[in-house]
Length: 195
Length: 195
DNA sequence: TCAAATTTAGAACATTTGTTCTAAATTTGA
DNA sequence: TCAAATTTAGAACAAATGTTCTAAATTTGA
Image (cartoon, rainbow over all chains, first blue to last red; front, side, top):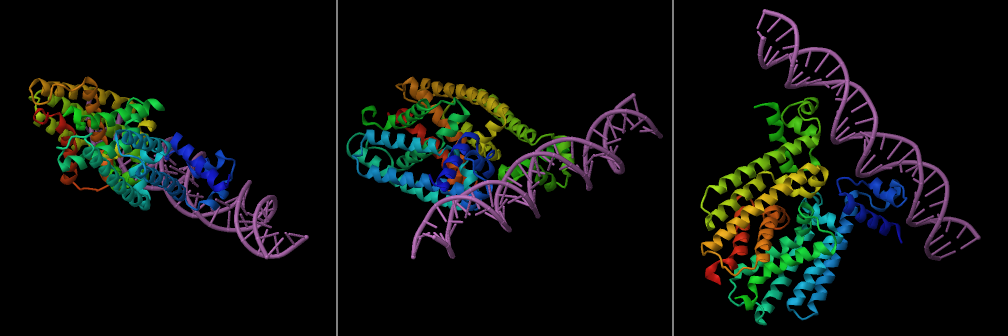
């Protein structure tokens, strides 16, 4: 494994486990038996590490979206998209736990996230329209509610992990199930059979 | 104004404006023309300042809940509770933006928040039962959905501000309206007239 | 093979941070 | 009023942090 890669892996692990507040470049370097000087040869500034990790996340989301284009858009597609996304949030948890702070610290990340969420919003709106067209969702949903629903979706997607940390602290699969269920509750009233 | 009070006001202002990452006790002291030594005479540790600010927030929430007991529980009561709560979140925004981090840093805050949210959950469940009994909400909502709905409520309540920072960055009243609307969308399907 | 490019360790540095200490100034209340 | 309690300013300190520098080790590729 290349040094750059080792640094990023170690950084992700430590940030996730101990929080960006408590981890310095020295910790990261030490955890892989590397000198601090060498770490800063590969990443001149601390923020370059965070930026690189965010790029990984953004790339993974791109893959997710590309993948979603090629499957039939039904209810199970929603479940799959949600689960995949939840897993990414979990993998890069430190980003989501400190998103606002990181966004202010590194404006490029805020901007990139904004683009990402906009693309994903379009994707979800398409899924909804499809579910309505296929008679799975009710067809009397006001437009404003559709975008409102998408918004709820993203709030849960981005902050379920923080909410879990603050409340029940479910672990692993349990946490995923708990908030997958929250998504189900969100969609429940929009299913045609409950009209 | 007493020194302690001045410190807390200045701390809240600076933390909110510039983030806990960028504000030190020296900044706080300097902003009110006080020496750092004196600040630490009043608050031995930085975390004591944060803890005191959180106590203010918790106290305000207690007041909110006590107040809610004495008004009729109808739809406008929900709107009022939401708006009041949103305003508190906005007043102590730095706490909500760094909640997980602060909770890990100062476990007493995490614990106190856990108690608070549990109490508020009960309060909201009561409101819902009341709205069902009064024929405003549908009466065919599964129990699991009720608690699910309350959960959504709290996720939006605690993280609307972070979501806003990351996306549209609405300002002032605009932001409040935007997310009050999100709550409305959440409740919309549960209104009896849309059954 | 061997010179050039790269990676690496470790020392060094300036700055910042939280906190403590001391001694002076101010306030309090009997 | 004046001694005791409190508040205050400012210096001081140790630890940590991000980053740079230097010189050695290693790798690369013609």
